[in-house]
Each structure stands twice: as C-alpha cells, then as structure tokens.
Image (cartoon, rainbow, N blue to C red):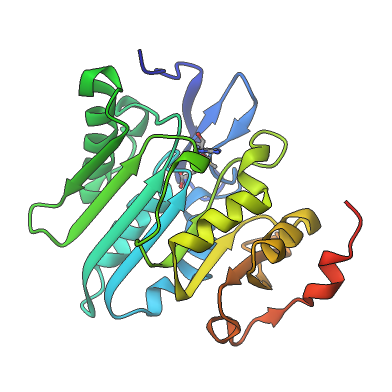
Length: 250
Ligand SMILES: C[S@@+](CC[C@H](N)C(=O)[O-])C[C@H]1O[C@@H](n2cnc3c(N)ncnc32)[C@H](O)[C@@H]1O
C-alpha cells in the first residue's frame, strides 16, 4: 500500500498561494510566508534557470506540494526562448492527486497525473513515473524513492532545487552524501539552490566538492545558499571561503 498522507492538508501562505501542511509533524511544505514567492526567488531565481535559453534541465530533491514544479512549468510556457523542459524530481512519500487540487493550469494537471500514476501503478510498486506533455516539450520524471537510492547521473541539471524539509525532520537530506548525489546529477555550469543558510549545510556542500556562495533571501529571510561545481557559474554572488567552513566546529 502507498501512504495516502491523510494528516497532510492544504494551507494558505502569506502571499495568498497554497502549499501543504503536515499536521502530525507540524511542518509546512513551503514557507508559510509565501509559497510561490519563496519558490520563484530561491529556486527558479537563484539557480539562474530563468536566464537559460533553448532547454531547461532541472533536478529536485523533494517533489512535495509541487509548487516548484508548477512554477517551473508556468515560467517555461511564458518564455519564448526555451523549447524543452526536462524535470526530474525525487520524493520518497509522494502526496496524492487530491492534495494537489489547488494547482491550476498545465503544471497542476501534470503533477496530479504523475502522483496518481505512482499511487495506482501496482499500488506504488513502480517507483519511477515518466510523463510527457501533449506537445512533447515537457518531460517529467518522478522518482518515488529515498534520495540515496536514486541515480540521477546523466541528467546534467542546470538547476538543482535542493528542497527537503529542515534538518530536524529530514537529516538525510543535508549530509555530504546527499550533496554528492546532487553534484552527480548536475551540469558543470549548473547551480544548486536551497533555502537553508546553516553553517553545517554549507560545510556539507564543501565536503561534497561544491563551490559555495550566499545570496539574498526572499522577504525577511536574510540569506540563502547557492552552490555549483564551478566558481564561474556563481559569478556575481558572494563566494564563501572553503577553509573557513571545513575547519568549523560541528
Ligand atoms: C519541503 S517539501 C518539498 C516542497 C516542494 N519542492 C514544493 O515546491 O512544494 C520536502 C519533500 O522532500 C521529501 N524528502 C525529504 N527527504 C527525502 C529523502 N531523503 N528522499 C526522498 N524524498 C525526501 C519529503 O517527502 C517532502 O515531500
């Protein structure tokens, strides 16, 4: 049986956009200050995805309430300079189509179709679901497995949305190994972005071999973290000193 996550309910955030709220664990799937604002600033914005031309290749840890996914589809369809979107997302506990009813438009339809195929395929035995938009321009794959079991080598993501819950809830998502997996999924010119600005997170990124920078956060949040396999991809951002973090106390 797949989990139906009945303790996860829709939640309206500060900018009027929707996310999900886990009542058992008291966690929001996106910032309760503003789901869409956070998604557009931290993930679509700070990864530099919106400036890319021709093709967008995205990988994500945490499909969750699909706000990042639906915002990416929306931005993709609004941009004449890009004709292909490839999106790989990993989530070990995909929500159901019912949870995603608040999403409108093509992204919402694709997100609901993805999770319902997962929940109905031999009742969740098929852990990888691939879907294509009607015109073939969008190719999305949901990997319904723990992050450390998924191999995204070959995806060559230009944008990596690092979006598990906080370290308190999802410690596995913030380790050196987790970031090494992200690195393997990325193009050399790609950028990974995450909402966390914790010292331990930056250290784990350095340990995995990333060049690491800070960027301004959304709303009242002071900073977020952006990382890349190459320093060149982080031009314009404030680069952090590797030695300072690798020597930092736990
Ligand atoms: C913050 S939510 C993602 C929000 C989503 N990106 C959005 O825009 O709505 C975090 C998600 O990460 C998933 N997750 C956390 N740790 C994971 C892991 N180690 N492997 C796979 N999925 C994980 C959780 O199941 C949860 O759905």
